[in-house]
Image 1 (cartoon, rainbow, N blue to C red):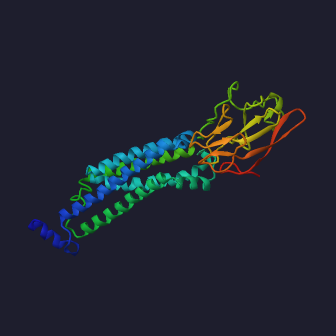
Image 2: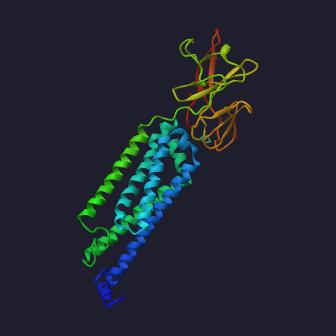
Image 3: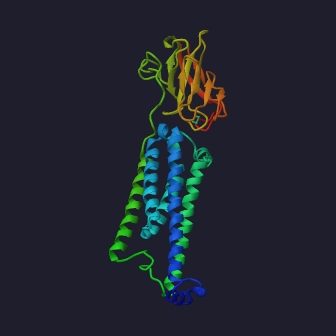
Length: 332
Ligand code: FES
């Protein structure tokens, strides 16, 4: 250590920190922030690749996460490349990311789920928890960096300029513009995610039916199909109790008709009926149900709710109530 450093060291807090040591420590903080942001991007990418419900149910959430990962990578790499002026924007970005991710829970209705069920699902994902945790690390390290820098500045031995936290008025303007831009981007992302309509049905229409849903134009009010128009073994679909809550109507060879919800009891993705196996497959995480809604393969753990039906003397079919409960539909 040079004599100059020795002198500065003696003038700083407790006589234990030199300017070069202070800069080394700040660089370490910065490396932690860079690594945490890159880790956050990795967890986000893992979610994008593995969780199909993001793409099938609310695609705006998926694109939002893509944007978050991209910004994480830019800021993370910038920190690792010693752009010390990115510490403050990284801190601000971590706050926004945490708010956006937790705020995502408020959009549970886009997944046809209650807030509680959606929160349980999200916090049950290790990658989601890890993403929040590493953004929390960015917050803690950012705060530590700030208080450490303040302490040094207070001692009047090192300035923010010396530490590369700001070099000129232009740098402050750039930092302000970066933070402002990130806020604007986050606000736009949040608005887009909240205002985007739920993804439309991912049901594969049965052969011979272009929409997959029953035609109710010639039926009395409230009827969803007529028994005479149904083919045995060929599913038809109707929404009940409200739009977006799709059910599958099935006429058996013996003429009996039954209906089950096709919203998977895991995270409410729409299942697809495969006539070859007479099973329903969930495209999101692979659950399989039999024709009666019983679980054949998880991760779903509960049976698909059914719809109680009544049929009038003309064969018109009316839904009466949901029987059974899941995260998406509740029986009455
Ligand atoms: S929504 Fe996850 S398996 Fe169906």
